[in-house]
Length: 250
Image 1 (tube, rainbow, N blue to C red):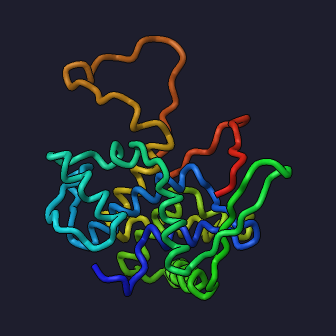
Image 2 (cartoon, rainbow, N blue to C red):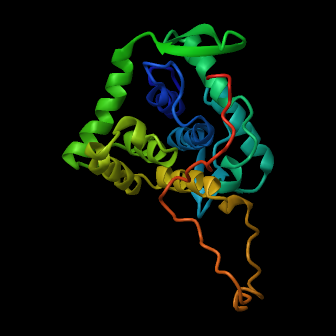
C-alpha cells in the first residue's frame, strides 16, 4: 500500500493527542485500539478478512508498511484464524510508542522532553500541523452532524474512537452527550470496524479472559448465590478507582 494516505492507527493516535498537554487520552485502552486499528487497515488493504468473530489471512503479501506487515506476519504464523478479541487482548508492548515515533519521523508530531516533579523524565508530543488533526476530526463531525453513512475508513475510525473512550475527549460534557451517542451509532456502518471495536470493549470488560463455555455444560443452572453482572456490550470499561497512574507521559 502506498503512503499517500494516513493509516487508521495513525489517525486514531492523532485524534487521541491532547494539543494542550502533549499526552494521549485514554492511554491504556488506546493500546488496544491501535491493535484493532491495524486489523481494520489490513482488511481495507485486502490482506485479512473477518470469519465470524475470527480474523483470517487471505493475502499474506506485505503492504509496504513495516508496522502493519509485522502484524500481518504474526497473524500468518498463527496458521488458523484467530479470534479478534484474543488478538487484540494479546501483548502489545510498545505499540503506542512505535506509532508516536513513526509520526515523529513523518514530521506529523515532534517530541518534547521534560521532567515530572523535577525527577522523572517525560516525553510529550505536539502536532506539527494541526490542519491534519482538524481534517480527521471534521470527518467525524460531519458523519455525526449529517447522519449520512460515512466511508468505511471514517466509520471504522469512529467505531474505534468510541471503543477506546475518546468520545468524552472529543465531545466533552453534557453538551457533547448527543455527539457521543451518535459516535457510538456509527459502529454499524462498517462490519470490520464494528467487529474490532466490540473486541476492544470486550477486552476492557474482561470477556477475553473468560473461558469458552462447554456446550455439554452450557445448560447447567448457575449455582445459588450472589448473581454476577455481565459486562455491558457497547460501553468501554472505566478504570477502577484507585488504580495506579503511570508517571511517564506518552
